Amino acid sequence: MIRDVPQHGGPVIYFSTGTGALLDQIAGLCSDVVSIDWRLSLDRAWRELGDDKAIQGNLDPVMLLADWPALRDRVDEILAQAAGRPGHIFNLGHGILPQTPVETVRRLADYVHEKTGR
Image (cartoon, rainbow, N blue to C red; front, side, top):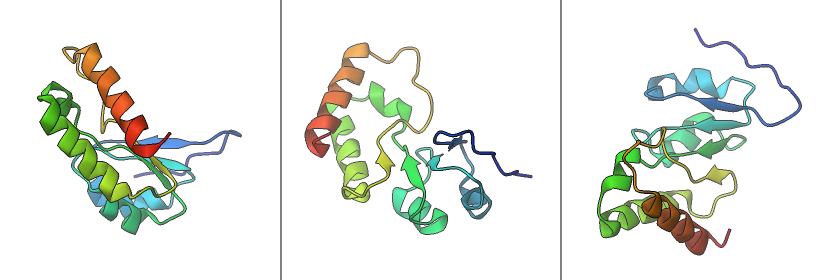
């Protein structure tokens, strides 16, 4: 059972993976931000969570092991779904894998900043 999370004066981020079936319960939590993994589209998450929740995610960490064109295409898809909407925090949909090249992470961050102007 999911319980309410108390506010502590700062933003509260609810993080889980594989919980797409529980979005109706997650929507009722006292969180400001919901982290979603790569198995859940941003569109569906916002539709089920509501516009008052910011969403963090949802790049599959395995994509950081792909070649740059494949990774760039996936990032573009995620950014297109977010459509510049306030409240989207581009992030991985789970932790970074140990074998992930640091240069790929840097390139990804630079690319997202370039595309979003942030």
